[in-house]
Length: 99
Image (cartoon, rainbow, N blue to C red; front, side, top):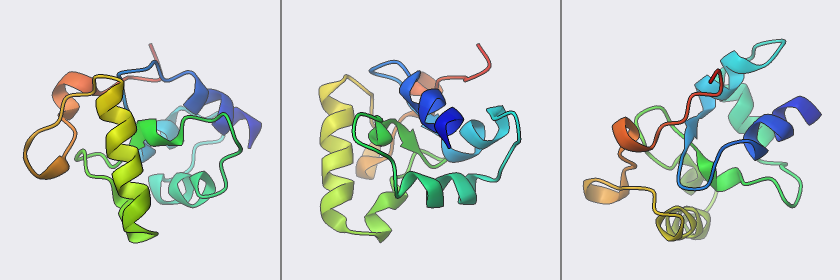
């Protein structure tokens, strides 16, 4: 799991990465779904809010609406651009972990 946490920690402020992109970049790739499950137990200091769905939505809201609000607030504070309805502008903000 340390590889996952290190990869998420490498996402620069103001950028986001999808669960699937993170999973594909791991030495032992995993699905975006599994990355999401693992992210639910991210340790302190891991910028969990920088991982979003491939379409820019914030699925953490399924766990609790408060978390979705916190994620959107943190992303906006970092300058991540949003489109309508609280969807991240992935064309502008997506970070490629392979770079």
